[in-house]
Image (cartoon, rainbow, N blue to C red; front, side, top):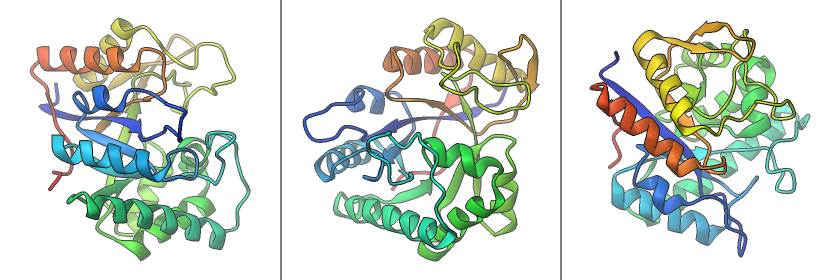
Length: 256
């Protein structure tokens, strides 16, 4: 089994009076926080509160950038031009960097959200736009993306550090893609099952697929979506199971 693994969650996704997930509880479990940047979710006060709590706990902070789609929670595909997408990503990273600086911490990586995450996994044009945006604003930022996807190779070729991500609470196709949320079984909610899947992933480098097969997968980080059913219990079960097998849960990039 790998000696270390990162555990991350999508946080800061409330908006005004509308709460989303339990950031405080998740920040006591995860080692990295993908913080919304306002385009799919997150208002300034929510982001500031989440970032300050992450900083206090030594949790690494990533910019969870999205298409400009609050109504659809960033899960609807958008056909932006490269120029538009570069500007949108730069804008979002810059906003979170400002909030982090005010909290005495910093953003150390970028993880696209929802439809943008899935699109850039294999879409070279939009992947290159996200990569260029990161290089323009801060080439020291790492890019987190779907393990095994071409975007990670493109990012490394462009000089960025990459983090390969696997999902604890999502089903996989035989091709290594995430099963569409529109399909039954796409989102997993059994904490025990998810924990066992993640232990096997870290120990053996394989994960079960929705068709009953297995997929070889090497990951640096495991994600539990903050808005998934029972997200806190699931994240805790994963961490407990991994640590019981001698694996240390720690961020891939130390927080200041």
